[in-house]
Amino acid sequence: MHKIQTFNQISEKGLEKFPGGSYEVGPEVAACEAILVRSHKLDSGNISAQLRAVARAGVGTNNVPVTECTEQGVVVFNTPGANANAVKELVLCGLLLSSRGVLPGINYVNTQTEIVDYSALSKLMEQEKKRFKGSEITGKTLGVIGLGAIGSLVAEMAIGLGMKVQGYDPALSVEAAWRLPSQVKRKENISSLVASSDFISLHLPVLEATRNLINEDMFSAMRPDTCLLNFARDEIVDSAALLAALDSGNLRMYVSDFPRAELMGRDNVISMPHIGASTGEAEENCAVMAADQLMDFLKNGNIRNSVNFPSLFLDRAIDAEKCTRLAICNRNVPTILGQILSVLADQNINVIDMLNKSRNEIAYNLIDLESIPSDSALKSIADIEDVIKVTVL
Image (tube, rainbow, N blue to C red):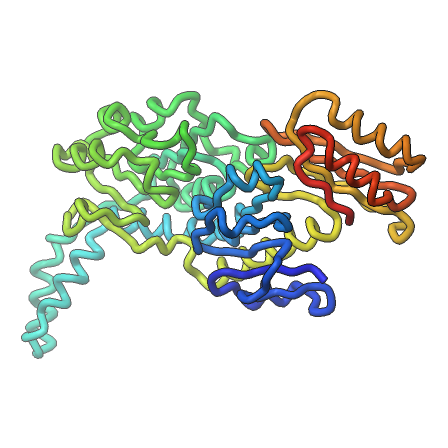
């Protein structure tokens, strides 16, 4: 019986994926092998010796102690792309709200509560509507910074709306490149993109390389009528530089899913309460994706969409009932795999299949064996220096 502890309200669509006879899932589950979480902030007290995985039903993992998990051999999953459509649609909303006088127009209409005569109200609206004149986004240039699951959808959407689209992503994967519409003009540096865009949309994770990426230099390079949309992470934009750009008029509008106290009440700022992925569909998609990844890992040791371990998939042998699989995590140093195989050879245990991959300081191995290793063999493997965790599947 695999034990999974949940935090937050996880969509029933995701929870239904776990077969009742094989999984115990819920907020009160103790001594768990895995954690399924949304926004709850985990700490070191949640990382127990028996914990094997943490699945975040969402993209960001800033609420998970990833470094500590890595040190203890705990795989951290996220669900990239599961909420991409929800965020894409909110970006469209931000594009339109920043271009047309929709919000000030609505606010103005709602103040005219004393006018009860329809004709008088209609006449007033006709007189005042010029105050809320905007512009169309068709023909404008959208610069997309970050061309992953969300950024590529945003680019495709903008092209469909008649916009010109250019993108920048120094870490663009082959898979992401295939998803990207051919009409997107690739920029080799970010300064060139911001200097030639009417709208800029951010779709990056928070890393040391991206923290305060949009800084004073970037704002100085922008056109005075530029609109910046941030539905990625607040920390990507330098707060002091942003305020200065808005005060000077160097930035026309800032649309963000991350409210800041110093930006409240400004006419050139639209703040939303972090609702980019807040749709029923996105929550279901994230929960289902997280559940599928957890089950495949707990049962087979396969890893997809981990933020700290390498991606690795090894098919089970045809006669899976007659073979044992070892999942071994170790520090990425030389000779470890050779030592593991030597232990198995000394025990006269035949290796049927195996796969080994590494990511930064961590290596991960799946080894299919013809017979079950003895407790002494498993202890010998676990006692190898730099081996972190050994699991029999």
